[in-house]
Length: 113
Image (cartoon, rainbow, N blue to C red):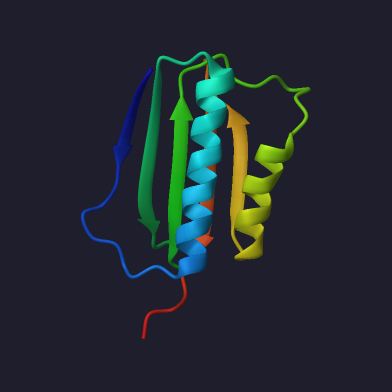
């Protein structure tokens, strides 16, 4: 499987809580891809979402088998959502139209002084 990572050259200073949440969400999502997706590729994209109250946006997309509509979230997917929610953010896991899965987390950044 091929993993690719895209990130801006410069990011603002992140709090320890945002760094850990981002790392753990990405780790869990990539583990799920490696263990369950039967994917050929997985793209990890990190960016700033300035339109949404200055947030760090983490998106993980794979081209695997996807998740079924009746899939029940396990501990890993629940922990991704909980980590984002603890910071006032969101984490959505959704199937893609053709195939694959998308994990999209938005983690709010504190106002820069």
